[in-house]
Structure formats: C-alpha cells, structure tokens
Image (cartoon, rainbow, N blue to C red; front, side, top):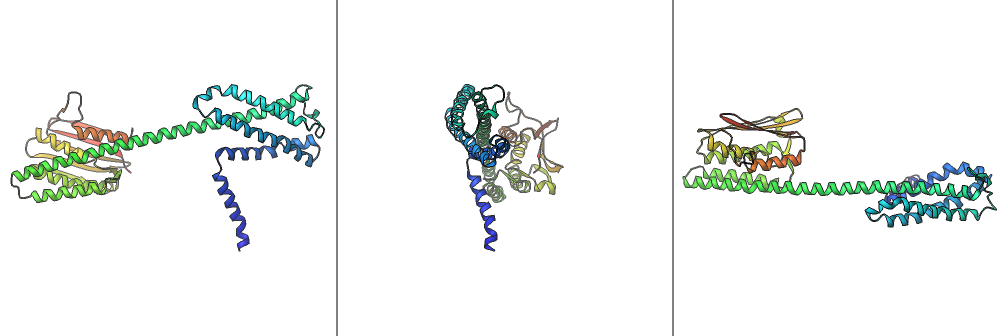
Length: 361
C-alpha cells in the first residue's frame, strides 16, 4: 500500500515545487522543454544519428538557455524603472546581436564534429546563416519576455489601483455610516429631553427604544450589509421615539414583505429616509403627520418607499436633496451600487415621496 502511494506523493511534491517557482522560471523551463523536442527531428537530420542530435541539442540549446539567463538579468535591471520601456527596442537589438555573435562563435568551435554546410539557407555564408538563425531565436525569446513582463506589470498596476480605490471607497463608506449614528443619537436624546420637560409617562419606553436601536447599531457596526428584516425591526424603535416626541401626532403605515426581509442591504439605509420625512413633514404637514414606509422585493430589485404628508422643503439654494442625511445616503448608494440604483423623489401638493431601488442580494 505504501509503495503504490509513493508515485502520487512524488507527483504532488513536484506540483508543489512547481507552483512555488517564480513565474519567469516556469515560463523559462516550460518553454525550453517544449522547444527541444520540437526541433529535435531537425537536429537528427543535421547530425545523422540520434546520439549526435542529443549532443547537438546540448551544445546549441544549452548555450541558448544560458544566454537567455544572462539576457534576463540585463533586461530585468534595465526595465526596473517603468520609463525604460521607451528604449526597449535598441536595448533588445544590441543584446540580441551581441548574444547571437557569442553563440555563433561558440557553435563554430564544434564545426569539426557537426559540419554546418547543411544549414546554409539564404546565402552561401555558413557563418552568416548560423548567426541569423541564432539571433532570430534570441529576438523571439526577448520579445516574449518583454511582452509578458509588460503585460504582467500592467496587470499588477491595475490591481494596485483597484486595491487603492477599494480601500478609499471602504474608508469613505465607513465615514458616511459613522456620521449617521451620532446624528440619530442627537435627535433621539433631544426627543427624550422634550419628553422629560413635558412629564410624559412613556419616557422610559423612549429610553428603551433608543437602547434597542443602539444595541442593533453596535451589533452590526462592522457589517457592510445586514438583513433588511433586522434593519426594519430596528427602525420601529426609532419610530416609537418619534411618535412619543410628537405626543402621538404621527400616523404610521409601515409594511414589509417576507422576501424583502431576507435581502441584504447597507446598514442604516431606512433611518435617514424616515428621519428626513419626519423632520420636514413636521414643518409643512397638518396634524397628524402621515408617514408611510413600504419595503418590497420585485424580482431582482428591492424597492423602498417612504412618503410623508406636507410638501418639499429646499434646504439650500444649491442643493435639493432634502437634508444631510439623504445626501449622505445618496453618496453611499453611488459607491455601493454604481449605475445599479435609483433614487426618485416625487413632490406633490400634499405629500412627498422618496423611492429607492437597489439590487436585491
């Protein structure tokens, strides 16, 4: 049993060693390992015998392998700086001509063993034909090396840029989300303070609702996405605070379907919509303020609609987003769903509606 398992173990070890090799060495070894058998029939014709062809391969392909290693060292040093790609053509030309001359001289040392007259292709000069053949081979190797290296460098640059952009987006999203909780906390404490001033009997319930919402926020503070059902349930605590601070002068129509509850959404997506509706609805709506929150899933899309009685309030002459919280949310959605989300604002005489559509995960 042990003996039969040894070949598999050896194959696995070889694969592990191969996977740890740098990319250059994998290409170098695999390329020459393929080149030698492909050109071996030609060497048999030149040498006349198989042992002679093997010796010819060792002399020519072995020297080519050694020369390409020296060329690799030169190219790697020259191309260490990105702007050196501009001078790569003259560098490759000089290096390949020099290497071709060196290899031609080396091969000519074995002229007594392997007559070279059979290799004359274009003109009667044996030396020139040999030089042309070896230099062309080295030029092809150089172009492959430079091309693969440039492509790999380009991919690494794109990856680094993508990582930097991703980190930048992540930091911005964390900053935007961090801005929401203090804003909510300030409004909630203000509502509780107002309730204490009026000696309302339900202040303890307001404190409990605030505690529940903050517990939810702390539980999911590191989560980029949360189930919509949990976000919706936590928002009910916020609405309890708002209803208590308005002495019950807030009528709420809220509903969510079962499919929508399972969808994953960015944390704190509902609260800025509802907060915006309550804040500006209180200023423009007759009592009681009518608030509606509907969340549903329509195929691949999650739809969130928040509407309130009253009319739209322009908060700034250069901005029509309806408040910092809504503007913050717009920026988060643009970062999370570029080109895949919609935020629609409907303004009518007696009510305002904000509708968000995002992909349902």
